[in-house]
Structure formats: C-alpha cells, structure tokens
Amino acid sequence: MNKNAKPLLRPLDFQPVYYQEQQMWFLRDPLQLSTRQLFMPEAMGPLLSLLDGQRTADEIHNQFCAMVGAPLDPQITADALDLLDDAYLLENEKSELAKRAILAEYRSQLFRPPALAGISYPADPQALTEQLQTYAGGGVVSQWKGRGIVSPHIDYNRGGQVYSQVWRSAESAILDAELIVILGTDHYGGLGRITLTNQSYATPYGVLPNDNALVDQLAAALGPEAAFANEINHHQEHSVELSAVWLHHIFNQAGKEPCPMVPILVGSFQHFLANGSRPANDERLLSFLEVLKRETADRRVLTVASVDLAHVGPAFGDQFLIDPARREKLAQLDSELMAAAVKGDAESWYSQIAAVDDHNRICGFAPTYLMLKYLGETNGTQIAYDQCPADDQESSFVSICGLLID
Image (cartoon, rainbow, N blue to C red; front, side, top):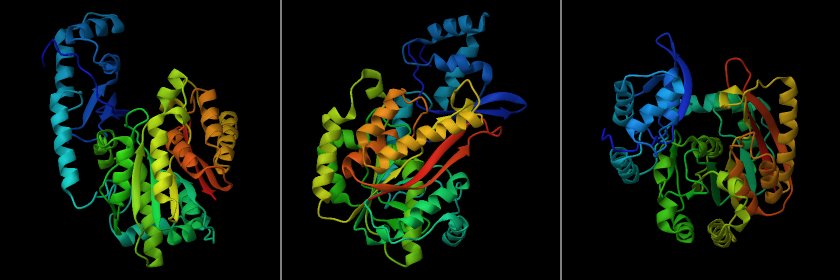
C-alpha cells in the first residue's frame, strides 16, 4: 500500500468471535466484495478505529503504538493494512472497481435473486412454506384492509411468531392491494439517503414485479444520481427481502399472482439528531413524499415498514446487561413509540427517539417515519411485540413488533 495514502475503512459488521482458540474480530463485508473472510485479533481493534481516512500509514502506526502503550514493529501495521486492502475492506480505487463490477452484474440480471435463500430460510418453496407455517399458531387471518403495516426484519428463527401474526392479520389487505411499497432499513446507506432500484425482487416462490414507472417518478424527485447512488446496497440488504418473502408467501397460499412491489431502502436519520434539524424540513424527503402521494393517490396501496425496534445490551456496545428491570423499561419505551405509530403521528415518533438521542438504537427510525408521513394521521392496532435475545447470555436484546395502520 502507498505509504502516503490515508486508509479509510468501509462500513463493516464487527462481530466478536472465538477463532483458533483466540478472541477475534470477524470483519463481515455487507457488500461481499470479496469471498475472503477476515479475522483479526482482538488486540488489533484500536488499529481499526484509526482507519478514518485522516491519517497516513505511519501516523496510524505511531498512534496505534501509543494506544497499546508499547513500541511495535511497523511491519505489523503494514501487514494489517495490506490484508484489509486485499479483502477490499478499504475505501479506495480497488474496492470502488469491485463495487462497480457487482453493481453492473446486479443490474444485468432479470431480477434480484434472494440473497438469503438457503442461508436464513429454505431455498425450496415447499420447505419454505412448511417453515413459515410452523409460526402460524400466533397468526389470525382477519378481514382488515388498512393502509400500512409494521413488520420485523429480524431472522425468522427469532421473529417468526411476530412475522406470522402481522402478515396473516394483513392477508385481506395484501390480496386486495394494487401496489405494495416496502420501506426497509438501509443498514449501510448514506445519511438520510433514499435508495431505489428498478430490479424486481425474487423469492423462492418466483418474482415480485416492480413498478418501474413509479420508481422512475420517485427517482426524478430525488435526482436520479442520488436515487441510485447506493443501489448496490439492494444486492445483499436483508430488510426488504425478509418481508418480501412473507408477502409472496401470502400470495402463494392464496393462489394469486402478486401485485407490483416497490422496494425502497432508507438510510439513517442520525445527522438530524446531530445537527438539531428535523426530517420534516428536508426538501428532498418532502419532494419524495409529495411525488409518492401524488402518483399513488388513485391506487389501493399497502405500505410496509420492514423494521426492528431497539438494539440494546453489550452486543451493541452498551456497558450494562439488560436485566429484567431494564427489559420492562424497554417495553414501556417501545410501547410509547408504538402508540405514536398506530396514530400515524410521525412527529411524535421522531421526537421520542430524538429526546433520548436514539440511545436504544431504533433500527426502524427512518423508514417508519417516512411511512407515517406518507399515510398521515390515522388509527391502528398493535398486533404483536417481542424482545429477542441477541447474545448467548441473553444480556442483549432486539425488540420487534407487528402493527396494523388503518
């Protein structure tokens, strides 16, 4: 690596693992630019924190030595940077070329293949149906035909009962809809970024057709370059996919061809919290919502926020365990958020999260806000709620819910 370069680490998942009898960090690349899997010793964590694009390799090495309190061989830092570069984990020309190649391949396909089929759920449609039906004990088919639902995007093993309850409760609305709009969390998207794609999402049941005319109208509102700048994120992002599978399951069980589904990824709102502004004053978001409302005004639309709620405990960086008292408090805070959502009160939803600087890490912060702004004031019903363990010690949790919005 060029010694004058200032290495910048790409957005990654850092997962603590025990590998080869050592405590290690598994650096998972959400875009999977390389087939290589990189594990780094826990002691190298401070080095990774220095890769912010502001320091040369020599500066990184010197500060790394200061952080560990010992002089180290410069080759240790150099080798680590080379490993990261070889695995396409740094923001540079090499990783940019890899991203372009993957995006070109993604766009050349007839549809977006299901990224998690055979990994998080069965790739065989019959086996998938059998798995989803095992969760049906908590789901009740109703005649509800409202306008929006809030569904989890956690894995089915933990969230299956909540998925089943909300999707089965919404079955009549799904089968009656002319268009489904799914707003999913973009875990690696830019701040406030809305990311579109003209690709149709596939599931083991077949292809859910996209509405390319609507996508193009929304892209014009956002600016086409901005609307598709992070389109590669659709390639592996799970938030839309895990709801799309349940959506397709409902159509498949009814023996009905699916209506069009528009998949939309929504990036973080953390910049609004940092600078004290609000999304209600963001002209780009307002323009997007205006066009979405106008172009769907005469259609039966079901909107889905494919989101999780809180992420709390040591697994997410908290310095405390989530004991029964903290779980009860979390349930109370989540209940207040859900109460705002079922009323269609987007500003209360935002204000509650902003008031505590999003300390519970609400994964559905931005997509749910946009859905509520699109739907406007309404009434709704809480269908399900759960707190799912996020570590083996059950000291960290992800909270999820199922809501019906009239």
